[in-house]
Length: 639
Image (cartoon, rainbow, N blue to C red; front, top):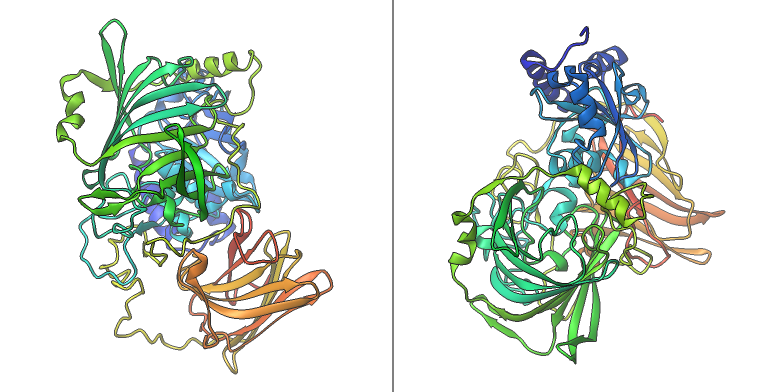
């Protein structure tokens, strides 16, 4: 073969290239340099093209490993179900190069099995105004869920330039000065952090809202019953949580309904230990099978439903209501939380009639959880009964006497099952639940529970490689520590101006005046909805930040300046003492809502990050998945 395969030398060059490009700006460098960098990945036996079932985008994989010199093996991988997404089958083209490398919106590449003989390189492009095809989620999807390594490769997406989707949260109360151990209170980065601890994390009393009665005990057990809707099933079982030791066990028995690709036996045990799954199937003939797999996320965290942590997540208190529980109507308090990747939400209801005495204090029992369910099964309703905090650690040792082996998932079987479930005429995304009723709509808004013992406060943000609130990144009160030389040297910047069509509905233009070191910024929104322009302390993050918000009311517009200290509405506080925004105005201009302001908080020694957001309606509320973004201003961004 004339083409070159990935080898140790190439791998070393990539690592050097990655270090260099992550220190630069997105899309920076001359075209010749970018072409040279991306060419490093434009090699191999050919391409495997397929439609990603999660994003519905066409995806191209460059077959860069030496194993694919065997064309038969490459075809088997691509067209025989070898792609690492259940049920996904592609088309192999020998000697081809992915078109994405030449696309103006080329983002970068995700390399799986980096430097090994079975290496593959997926090329990605950005899709404007589409959250799923943003830098944040593309990189997060590559490294969190895909198990790959991201290289910018001359594209537009660098790991060091991403925002919340690639940062980890150390979930402690604002003002905490407790010294934490490695992994303590750490959330999974990005979207997964909305519900899950980091795979190597553990949960203690130092973590946020641990004393809240709506934060589940760190150690508890309950009987379970799960009803699924699309393919009706009824499963009963038991669950044990021990998040201080990063472990969970769940037993389940299928009483009603048919077996499926994920549940081959009626009696099953599932163990989750940090980054590892153990799946035990108990056969009717007395035998069993035990398989081991890597987990893309950590264990469900105790306070997951009551905060808005997690990339683009929104937590909403829905109030008090009655629900049927054990044959009677019982009063509950109800919360829901969004999960942007699926554009869906989950619901959890807590007992509002009786308190639960636990070693951690009084708690409220979780009685009902409703989620977009498992593949092929539809929305799931989980019920919990006979709650307790007393059990032996021995329950987690069940796998030790079994012969457990690494899982070899049969993705071709998954595809066949999908076709059987759809009369042999299945296209699109096998295994995903398209019939969920829990899709985000205009009713979803940020809403706190004022009467609940929940602290809605800013958490500490840990950049990749940081160690939490007691590191140089963050101080105990959640604010950046000021160094002795915090007063940066003045930078001589001449007058500059620019503009940007941020998306279909938002346009911004600006001009910098060096005589008074002020930036005049005007932003227009082509919608009759609330609108905000903010200046965050950390690039592209929603908080902490200072902002101007405009709330339209007919022909009138109410505008004010605010400080944002958390995702929740209670963390948005009106302030007339924001020195960085001395002048602002909000008004209507035809069918456009306008924010005009003066900003004096930057000397432009580095690009100024500006975030924008707008809602579904005039009243301040949730901005939706596509209703928020950011852009940067510098002397070089002239529009």
